[in-house]
Image (tube, rainbow, N blue to C red):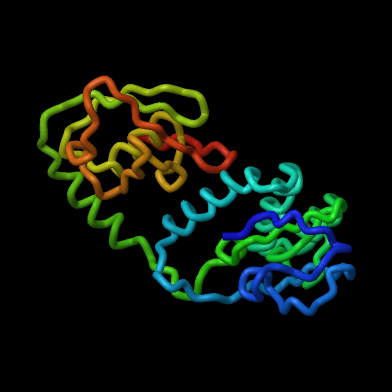
Length: 235
């Protein structure tokens, strides 16, 4: 969803649909408008938790530079989108202006760089859906199950996207979330910023280590999102 169309501003009309571009295709792409401060309101077809929304955003931003756009523009759009969602409209506008990004509709959902390349951002990277699901119940359930972990001990090898390798002694009945919290204790990385992958499969927080089917000696890839380190928590 979203991406760079590589369309020249002086060329033919928009090829995107109104939903993905944030406005009708009849709007002239030659006129730049100020960034609108109001957040896009939308409802997800499938209700998402905050963690699922964050993973969906991370996946988009991780793959966005693979489209035909320029990486520095994608980076600027990501920073502007974050600033806008957190309520700093002035900063978002400054980022857009500094990168010479044009907004024919006044929204980051449809914009152009100074070379005429078109960029389209999906609405889910700009705001949360109105039907976002709270994750409290999942955390509570995981906490309850952690207190009765009685399985045999095993060693789990993890390779963080930060470049660091870890070896943790865990129980086979521990949940992925519990081990994420161990990483938080040792490395200061909040569980919400960790995405675990093994053999191309995303391991959910509720999965037990024994259900992940990780052969002895194999490594779990841990993608760490965000660039701001957290302070380690006390044990």
